Image (cartoon, rainbow, N blue to C red; front, side):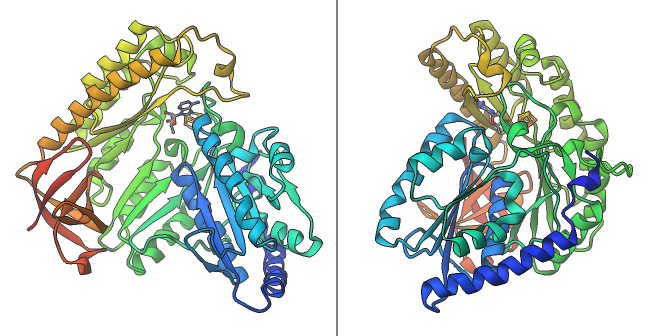
Length: 472
Ligand code: 5AD
Ligand code: SF4
């Protein structure tokens, strides 16, 4: 598909606006004139968080008050994830439990959307097993949520709308953001990599990038509103712009945002190692506002497993990139994702993962036990290893990483860090939470009026998951 084929036209968006008006009338009719209340629940990654902010935006336009839980809700939207089986089980359990609220309030509308329902068969399963669900819509239908909700309200029947598509691009939806300090900024959607274990390319369509101008304008306007921390989102941000054909790559986009006026930080995730170029690291080093942090999932430290995963790099190539990044960007924080127990992964192949973890020295790592996803190539592979063996390996990896994280965090003791204070959390004597430039969590004591401000914290203690300190 050409880039323009993804773009939703103004006429289509105008039709959605008319659906918003009709849905508002119909919902008000249902509540007897009381302002309707809506709850959106989100599972999974930051991309899903960002999609939910758009769903909240559409619900707000429809006239709903957004509330923090299902009780009292006239409309419930469950935005689902499909990355691992455990996530799906939990979601299905929670959707099942909504039946009680619906029995008490039969006028309530329950919608389920996102990656889980985009998989073949899931929508039918929900249709059959969860009679209390009124609306199911797939990832490619997000922009049509007003139309689908209006159809449920006007026809008074259940609606199931899943379309197999390569995706869409749409600038017209105003999100209601959950923070006044930090903002998610999608820069591209979809994934073309087809790592053999991963469901994402099947449920999120092909890679498509937003125009750089739209992204820069969005950040500029949020800076003016006081936002201080931006995370540029994409399944693989390093292939940003390839579909635009205008010669702007991700590093160029970082430079464009960096040159905006204001005191703020630019973060991004996720980077695919095969597409992380020297130019990216050179740009990170030279751009003042780009956080010195890279999330660079390596998934495995063994070349046979990496090939079987279709990752497109060797362990040595990954290590060389990591070393170049650490040399080029002083003080760089590196984090990663790793999968334990890919089908057929042997003990010695797993030990290659331990070795790479030791050689790079990540500040933090997200570790997952392989979960077969129907429809992906890896799900068809033989797997002679038991769950118990995988859990043992997982525990060994966790112990090693905890040690490394602690060591990395101890290096901060005695230093003064510029942090962005982002919230409260009572942890012993500490009441405020904050993040360093590299994204490390720092707890300290201070007035809540500082939330949303940059400050300096002297680090006095470290744990494997966080730092502790005092306000300078
Ligand atoms: N099983 C386990 N972990 C997975 N991930 C993606 N697919 C699977 C799967 N089938 C992990 C990868 C990815 C992260 C977001 O989730 O490590 O980087
Ligand atoms: Fe999944 Fe690989 Fe795409 Fe990441 S890059 S979303 S792991 S297919």
